Length: 285
Picture (cartoon, rainbow, N blue to C red):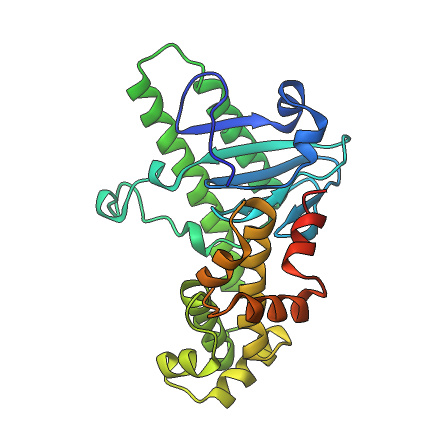
């Protein structure tokens, strides 16, 4: 796991340009995908880079904004002809539910934001200005407590704007069908329980529906059946752990709910075409 290590002044949030990052680290380090233990926002300002998120390419353009969460694997790609803002912060830097009030600071739905947003011109300009101001304010001569408080509220303002953009987009879309709503709840449950619940029946019981109706909802929303959705989430976590930890394969298998490492190896090969050891070697180059 790639830990948060602020550059220069020690703050709980850091804002800088990709071009600045290129000045302080090697091209190889930038190209290397990392698994983060913090949140990161990537706001593309120039160029058309391809970002890599959880081993999948994400084509971007000016106005693209990625919301990366702890545990995800991210690579900035090979391109040198692009720039953008990077914002790094831990979840505990944001106010907790108990610290927010409806009048002063709404609870932020950070985990409700999509992984990839495309900002319109007005919201892009406003976001750019807010991030530039945060970068400047981080260097102000003031007490650390005051700087932290200022940056905390500025970050909340950025995230609140993004939540408003996303909510507006959702409101403009046709109402979700009952099946799609069920799939959204299913995906949330899978993220919470995939290490222990490998069977569709476990999720159907909690959702109060039959396995058949859950599979139908999954196909409608994703093109995959419910069992494939569960398998994909298990496989993704296995890839993350194999590529970005030194944990022995048998412990990875155990942590993902497999009674035997051989069963995990068969599962992983069926899903990816590679053995766990082969995938680990290939992704450590």
